[in-house]
Image (tube, rainbow, N blue to C red):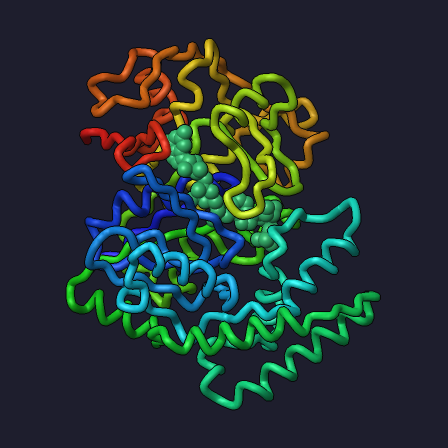
Length: 422
Ligand code: GDP
Ligand code: IMO
Ligand code: MG
């Protein structure tokens, strides 16, 4: 009986998809527990690249059940696009994917509301992915949502009621959308969804556990985008932290085993909001170019900066991380100097704790500078090959973070993954 959780410790895009794929053969099931198509999880193997949005990253290995849990919000149209592309490439998705009856549906009007809310915020906009995430979770919390299981019970009426409420709100905001085409495609996609196994996923998951099976939970977004603990209001609308796996799957807290926390050897953020270690200079640009830091979903430029250990310590604490996974160290292979933020100076006072607000103008990062390893590590196969400076960098991070780094990713491919001996 075992539920392990893998989640991002920064502002998303840490490389969760790649590592879930690598770890999947050790589990019987893989489950997404929150978020929706705002996620873009990239996997690369055998010269091919896939980007998954709503479907778990365990579908490319063999024999695992993949589950979309109740905490997820699902857009039928985007799901259909994603699923049909995968089926075309030979994945028998209908055989391996189970979707919770309790996932909340993203309606076309949720996407329109997302856009209208952003427009109304003007300069203070969040820079959302535009996928309707906020409005869908808003409806869930305010008890106006539409769930996948509803498609079997008086659905037309429930849908029309929800849609008309949204249209009234949009009209009050000065928006008069013509969305007949969007609606048509959405209703078609609802029919398509009926071809999948729509289940009571809390029973499925707890039944697996009872049978001695193991489950890997795949987080989306990152801890600093968590609605309670992230850089509010510049966050997403779900609990991205480990606790989200309990509520988003119906797994009791005492069933959680390992918590894998993923971070990049530097830091990125996409969308608006504060980012204390952001670099606006040539170094930031170099990280963006070498790391191909452009959004997997929106193609937007990701903002880049040095690793922030204040934020990482906070994320490790909130999630109860037991093992760290460091991604994209290869991006720093050619740097003379690598910096790490070990504390913040706020109004002249140093702190190692993540404060209530991290607005740029009152925070000054305190950096430690480390020598770069200046070695192309992308073909390395084991930790014995690590250059001394790189080993020192890892030891430095482990000491600062008080948690072991057990896996290091040195390139986007499945094979470019080094597991350390413990
Ligand atoms: P996720 O949302 O956490 O799954 O991450 P994304 O897929 O949005 O972004 C991670 C990006 O980095 C993807 O383009 C991956 O292919 C790529 N990637 C993952 N691990 C590594 C790595 O170790 N090195 C390099 N250079 N790229 C990586
Ligand atoms: P993965 O799972 C990075 C960001 C958006 C925006 C904020 C709110 O690939 O790591 P939303 O559409 O959720 O209302 O947008 O959150 N955001 C992400 N940033 N990776 C993600 O997912 C993200 N999902 C949302 O850019 O700033
Ligand atoms: Mg991503």
